[in-house]
Image 1 (cartoon, rainbow, N blue to C red):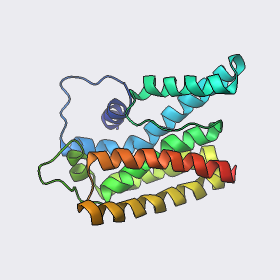
Image 2: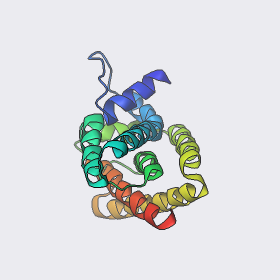
Image 3: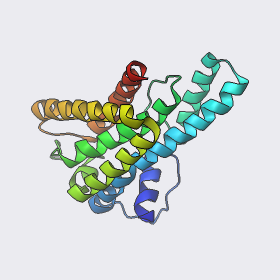
Image 4: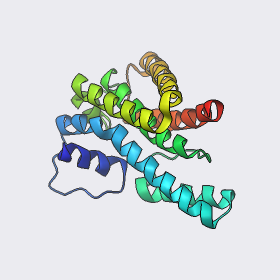
Length: 197
């Protein structure tokens, strides 16, 4: 568990990994279990930063500083839009990272020559997806309640739509598709949060 969480942190944030770490499809696939949890950590860190900065600066400055904070935490891996809905920051981090797990678990890899996303897609198993789903559901209920779960269902449906689209266009997914899915779902969560909250 600790090793998988550490690997997920290392891939999704600037948390340093050991040079001796073995990056195999099995270790990368199993680390995806913890993507929603890492997303929750990222969202909570940004929420705390938003509260702190909100005391010191006007909202427009806070938005810019949150963007900088996201860059510092994630290394700019998946940039996104921001809103002044603090629980939505947690939902955004959790649900968009879970969507990557959903897509990787139920999609073939598109490139015959391999790529950065290949070991994740080939290494993830159904039990990894179920564990990630339970973590995402727990976090979503805790920070978003039933409204958050409704947003989560819509994000999962949108991800399924993306899966069908990329399967028809590419024959599967790639690492770029996983990243794009994350970013699109971050924006979708923020958009939906403005409607339901």
